[in-house]
Length: 269
Image 1 (tube, rainbow, N blue to C red):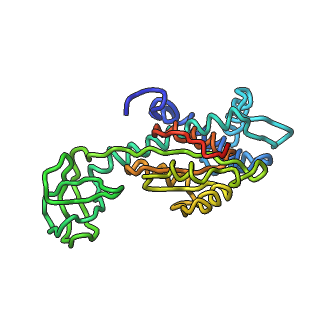
Image 2 (cartoon, rainbow, N blue to C red):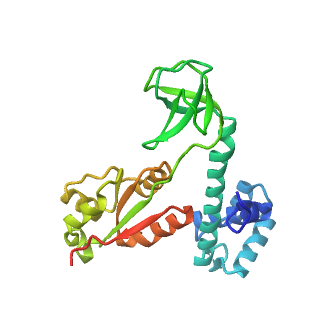
Image 3 (cartoon, rainbow, N blue to C red):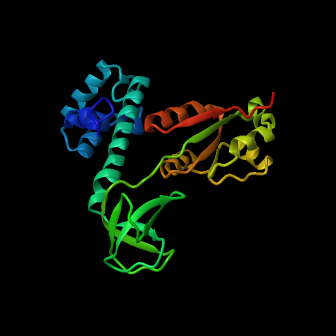
């Protein structure tokens, strides 16, 4: 990772103090407004006096608001600080999974042909899936078990770079039912946006009905936001139909993970 503002080694992980502040804010948010400092202290393994001092500092910085003895709430500023650092930690975890652990782990892939233990294989992505085949590729590994074609196979000592291009996400906003819901969506226009998408997702009942009315059942509904992000990271082209009140937060999420996206308007004139 390149050192900078988004690198957690230069932000939240630079000191135990910053980690503790994050944990305290999370604990307050989970239990507000009635917050027991003793319980937080026991959970984090620090003294109640230390927790009291941290909370006093967070109040002074405007990240926590106090309303009487033992009553605390995380402010908007505090929520934004938590989210920013949580996103940094998530990016760091992704770096560990993708760039570090892959050097020592056994990875599961689909056998593109019959393979035997000890075979040197090339590893590649296709349709969002990891495949292993006996051919020269920029990414290579060693098969750890016999496997028939199209079965799962373990690949160790993964080296090189897997040729891979992240997918993009087409984002379609639909209004809440109070403002017309699925009835305002132009079905023909919506289908044009969905054309060629590998994965189609819906967020909100209005979005689900709009897709169903257009003759397209969504591939994802529950957990759709994170699902399309994961699919795009695996190289799939995605489309998500999302209710307007979730729209802005989802775009911020895409910005935080640096995925490409386009915005489309399926609303009938």
